[in-house]
View 1 (tube, one colour):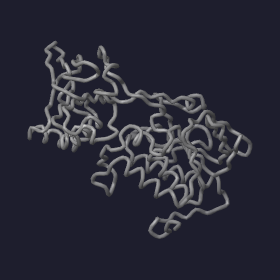
View 2 (tube, rainbow, N blue to C red; view 1 turned 30 degrees about the horizontal axis):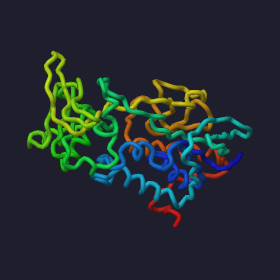
View 3 (cartoon, one colour; view 1 turned 90 degrees about the vertical axis):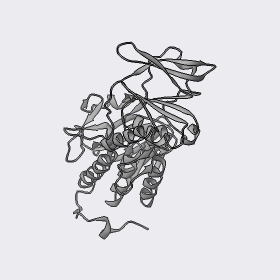
Length: 336
């Protein structure tokens, strides 16, 4: 068994976990980062590496993979140690108000504090209940876009009304032969500006709005789609020509072992103090999508703020004899 000692163990190497390394590092705290995925990036890289993100300050548009690359570079001066490719299996309180985090490879990280930045936990797509769906999965039906270019010249049908559906419709309209958006009502759950852009493209004839309809069936053979059958609540149906179906109905969420750690949970999220992101267990903090409190907004930028608050709350726990004077990065600088 390999045991590593550090100041902070961060569970989750997504964007918020990476920024937590930076914030902790700016306060002189060393970090080890654990993640089940084999590379840093979390959901951003696993589900939509080429998806454009529009609400990162300073970047009118940035791809998920590019954002992760820059966050990793930002964290690099603080020499984080990554333990990737193996899920965390255990969390144990030990003497001295410390914690041991264990992963499936037998790695043990002994830390003074733990930041849980596990996103939505273990995740998988919500699949539409369509007969014969499995025959098309991986060839004509996809739940994420790994390579945007793979859809060039294709007839793409996107189902859903959230940010992923709207953002990909906008993006793929640039390269696909056609894009149709299927939604059960003429109101979307996406960011207002994204919805405005979607409707503008529809008005230009570059996107077809198939509303109010929902998925009803698939037509094709040998795993290749010819059309997607859609239907209104009144039973009126039509066929939308398609080579590709992208159903974006969100992710199913499973906390896995996190549910057994004695944390206060609310609807599969960890309840935290809004000012510090502290959980109900001393020394354990939660940030990003997995954390909840009144008024919480599930945005990456919210997670960034929470990472900073957690790091500042951890410092006096681990360095009680040090006076922490708040300094801006512009005056403090970053190690070269």
